[in-house]
Image (cartoon, rainbow, N blue to C red; front, side):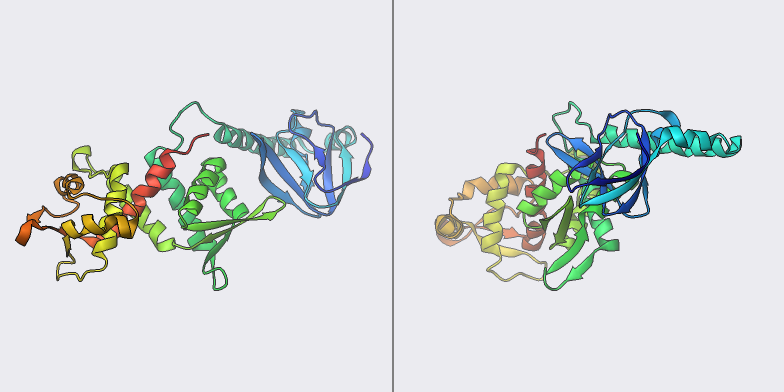
Amino acid sequence: MSSGPKKITRDHYLFREGDAPDAMYVVKSGKLAVVKSKQTSEIILAEIGPGAMVGEMAFFDNKPRSASVKAMKDSEVIALPYKALHAQFQNIPEWCKAIMRTVNNHLRNANQRIKELEKNDNSEDLFPPHTINKLVAILTLVAHKFGKYSEEDKGVVLGGNLLRNYTIQIFQEATHKMQKMMGVLSELQYIKLEDLGEGKQKIVIYKMDDLFTFVDWHNEFLFKQEKDRVVIKEEEIKILNCIVHFAKKLPKNDKGLVKLNLSEMQNESMREVGYLVKTEETLGLCEKKLIGDQTMGDAGILFTDVPVDELDRIVPFWKFIYAMAKVRR
């Protein structure tokens, strides 16, 4: 390896993960990205601009490159071969060498931890309940601290790289899980994801308050004893959506309840929501106390009391939970 300037065109690699090391580099112009392979894509761990150094870790331990470095735009670097640097390194005091090696080991260990986090495990359950809650909490906390509301986008805007760094470096969660979860939130229209190119992503959060509420509600749910948990089955979501649809048209009493005509709902459900909901299908919801017991009025008409605001709040949460359960690797 000779010293001096070296040009790298956009999307070409300075070196790849696993390569034998022979030099470190100072970025003279352009922009580089430190990346790791993830199945068929790459995860950007850091971006490096002019004046920064890359490839220095292997100088101390001569281990293979721990990540790849590629050009995000046409760039130029100055190569500093290890062979020449080692001669200079001998003149540094031993205590200084020890500090530098220690720092390097910490960085190497951190990279290994990142690699472990990004690995797929063999578990079929990619998103256990506490993981879902943690990921939503990370998204909302980072967005609350660093996001900016945009009138143009009608939501809180957050940079994907910033969220990625916090996810893996601060909270030590795998970024591919965060990305998959955000994909589900995007499908459910809680957020919008926009690819800006060069590994950058724009996140627009439309329903920040709902996501904050989900974290509190789900955390409270998870810490209840199992006998005290009220679980909404996936097939009950459509029934509840229909109930909420009709209940929203009616006035609430002083307790926030709506007296819903179930017989009328059955007759009108196909026309208004596109599927039939029979009165007997609501009995399970009555047993769970999600809605009031059925009462019979004149001419055999069935009624129930509906806590419409509460159902309108939690039913979308269950839809999100079941959507996450279907995410696979």
